[in-house]
Length: 97
Image (cartoon, rainbow, N blue to C red; front, side, top):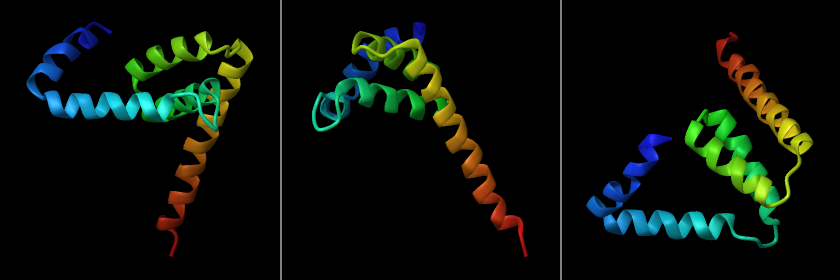
């Protein structure tokens, strides 16, 4: 998590890109047709499949703040695991003659 302290330097060196990313992130995760709690659980599932420790930490915090329960966090883990495993199985079709 120490590298997150360097986001300021990244933004300073690529201000337009950082502002655009922050605006996208804010809009995508804002409460809307999909409630914020569900968006944060989706973000966690994606972070579990991409294995981003920063996203896991940040979105876990936001999911809990939005009311996610330990049970919801656990089920999110297995949704991500099922999708990741499913992707491996489906890609296995490329190995078949």
